Length: 83
Image: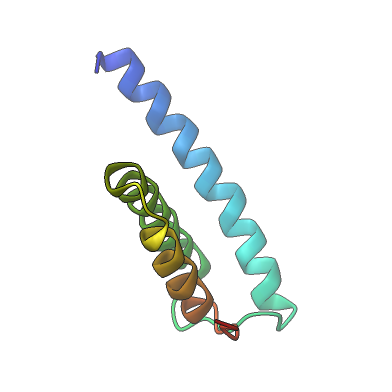
């Protein structure tokens, strides 16, 4: 990537993570989810997890990575997994 493209992508992903972290924090504050770490860290972990799962789904032509990501997300947020 060119440096300008890299910086644009970095800024965009940081904004997405910031917005998601605010939602995660609000859910934590409302006792809708349980976290073992701070909202920013959890959000970054989940964002990176889903980026990787999306890539692996394309590589493998199977939804298994997305299913695993969903299970991990529910676990990380302290939500029940109904699979």
